[in-house]
Image (cartoon, rainbow over all chains, first blue to last red; front, top):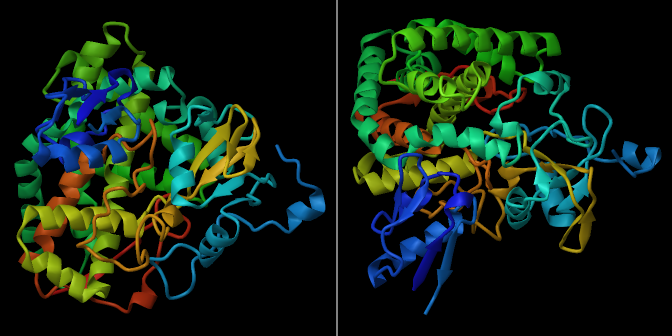
Length: 64
Length: 409
């Protein structure tokens, strides 16, 4: 799995951090930061859920 | 505004619609009928216009996330909630009724303090507050009104601390907020209440400039206003938004959530008997979905023609996106009318969706988790102290709830 985030689109709802805290973080303004763009198998469900709930559609996934 | 003929328009269903008697937790039955028979259909609202009512979960999400849809009430065709909101929206705007890039510019000035890490740091003090309020309630008269004993003070105290607003002024901001959210308020009342709150915040910003503390208003005035990033009036308006939205919505979720759980004792037992924070967090999402207290629908207007499911929504047409019935869509949530605190409800749209999705949601989650995770465990005998039919529900409110919730233990 390959993850990309679109920071200009991010609205800082923070849900990605709740769903996959080992993959997503927030900067001082609450904007998404990617901790890894290739999450391990244990984190992938959380990343999929994060992408599904992101209100700004700022998370893009490529399943490999 | 509308292309419907006058005769046809008179036959359109009126919005908002009444809930069914005896079903205080369920959205109006007409909304449910429309979702299955005509999920994109016109309704007639108070000013005689006929915006589109959108009732399916996937449509609501798609349109709330569509950049061709505007939240700006200045565009013709925007479906105002009532005359009071129309009057208010002209000169008392905040970023919730602006579009990007202006919306993003202002919103990003206050997203930092609501980051998950900051909210987690707040959790112990929120927990203490909840425990203190429950102690005080148990030490006071029995029965008690849960609204004044717990539901209103907890989020009010928390948002006051976060913003740096003296809690001693809670009468002033709670009273004015009630005027703003009541559908029956006159335009003069709403404009007056909004102005009173804005002036109050404006004065507070001046105090914060002289004596900055570790709070959001101090940061706003020293790092945003005084550097030219925003005007002081913009900061004051933003303060009003955070203060009002920060206590009223959560307070209603606390009371209505408790009422729903008391009416569903097997669900309450699941929450009470399982100390796992994950279970409590899941229950919060389910109660947000099930109750969807933002029952007036999200309001938008179309900027460029949009085709959705074979229907063209033209530029200049208003949209009411009914997130309450969308959260009861069986396509998105199996057996949607059942309260099931163990289901995965995280995809709900109770906080809205798109760039305007609730800014304070991480704070609301921490507060609701603390209350739902504590109240029923500490007060296992908690019960309604009156008949549910005697409760006064906020049918007339922009946000749904009950005015009072008498409880005993």
